[in-house]
Length: 594
Image (cartoon, rainbow, N blue to C red; front, side, top):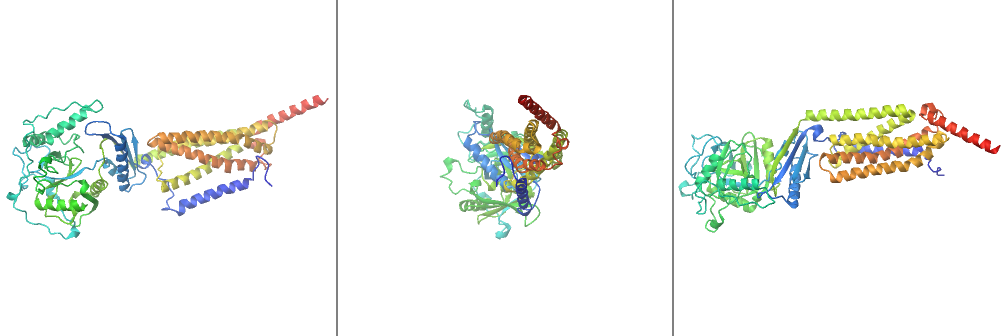
């Protein structure tokens, strides 16, 4: 026979809770990698946070479609790093990348647009602090032994070591090669002054648009004198407005990745007016971009120390690469990423077969970052790193300790209040909170394992706030229980009535908290989402503990003569008021009968 309304079988509810805990921790210890620790966020274990601000060549506002596509591509790159717990979120026109852990330094290069091109180096690389030669550079001038050692002298581009392609092929007759000096144009400015910049539309950043146009006029001019002056004026220590905005059909004056050398580079493609007249001219034009690459991978250098980047071209790209390398043996080719020279190796021989190897003084991280960027394609927008913050694991550990101390202080204050005000019922509150913590910990471990959830300081704040919400549910129940005792009922008879009357209030309060957390999670970004998630999760688990633990424990205590002692249970004052209420009611009845 079912128990009366409000009365339950406590053992049944407590057994259900025990089964839930056992099943939860069976999943924790016997599934996945067996780690019983939740994943920590960037502010608790250290890592890197990068804020990227989108920009376009004309200074206009980027479109929603372009921003969303850029976010998706960067997420793919983040996954390529192999670091769990990373996230990419939009914040207006910004993308915020957070990569926790010790292997997060690669996040700083994730915003590269990855606009790759292969450009022939014209003449000698120029030290960043020196002026260029007064003579126009020519591709037929090999590096002299007396020149300062350029980066290309230690780097070569060759077939992969396993391909068995011949090395050291003699250079072809240089005099027979067409000059790689970019053709001058009659329409080019005759002086070094850049052309005036047209007025920008009202919805663009005129300063940015002007910087890009001026940089193109100088550093991508078809006039040799302008290119020479651009190389003289270029300051490699300043941000480059042409980053990701260079024109592939024109020459380019740019800097190397380390900012120590400046380069004058040939166009990637012949000018449109010369495309028909020079269909097979690969002595100057490589015609190769990142779209011709099928795959990129970082590997140990089989012929020496350091690491190399192996590139696999698509079929058409492999044909272009073979023709270009055959026409430029012993010449330097620049691997240009977003208008910046990543490396400038020397071509040792013609490379056929659709694969090549870029070797140089690459560390493992540098090689992996370059391969990862090339592998996953170009972004539709250019980005500036407006903020890059690296948090050390030591600082993360201090943050974790501070969060745990704050949570411990909050729990201690709740415990002291409950023991002082509720006594036995306060002990049940402490026990319920402890069991709630057991469930929360197990859920955090599984969420980190299944969906990559990481606990950060904001999430810890959510749990601390949830302590008050959980304790509030207990207080609602206990205060309703006191009201029933004040009305003259015994502890045992008051429990089912108090539960029925408090249950609706507890459900309503937790529903409001959960809805607020859900709305905050939907509209928030970044770490605020972590706060909302943990707050909502704790609210749901609060209901589990109140229904399966707190109520059954109070019901069991109400059946014990020892535990129902008013002085022990914390209901002494309410019991005295109840006795006075019963005495008053009895006296009024006796007077009425008389």
